[in-house]
Image 1 (cartoon, rainbow over the protein chains, first blue to last red):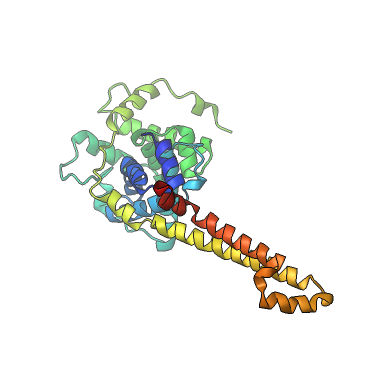
Image 2: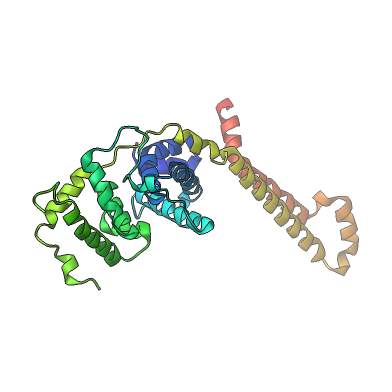
Length: 178
Length: 123
């Protein structure tokens, strides 16, 4: 069953099983995104992800399919993150969180390549890192990123290009072509 | 406006682009009960329908009452005796009948799905 079919079932008959399937399909992307924003705080990210899905359920009537469902969810998640950051004023950033690009539940250490990529990304500004995460790790297009972050398309392109320019020398040893 | 250099990336940009795409992929996070926790926090569907039903019934009855009241008050002083009669036999007056019909319609509309589900299979 496709996402629009599941959404229709939820909207028409409050089908919790259908919504559960949507959560199951998109939880990884939303949690990865929020873990990135929370700089590795998995507990905070999962709490925000849960709130994101509950709000999506309540506001499903406002989803008109102009974007993909996952992009819409990421937009809600980003709003939740901004609100949480505003409430807390400061988000605790532990140095060990910055050492990893995307901490996963797996205890396996990052490969040298991933480690270098993570360290290189940590040298970027937050906006550049976020744009790169959404583009390369979440697979979003430039207009989709602009929609999620609620910023102009040109700003997204600037962040991506600046981020890549900064990464180029840092990753030169891994990619001889650059 | 975007600067021209943003639209035309440098020649080796494609190589970096390809490299980043190949090496930035994230492993999917295991659900680990996350979906179950989300579903447990969702409002119960029955409660949402029940709340909607309550509002529909309340609205219908209030509207019916308003129509009945308007009908009785609108009959004027000349119908003061009729008012006394209508209070003793409320169902005998047209406004009261209208109000009752409206209230019944609102109750039927509010519970129509439940009535259909419960009664139709028996027919």
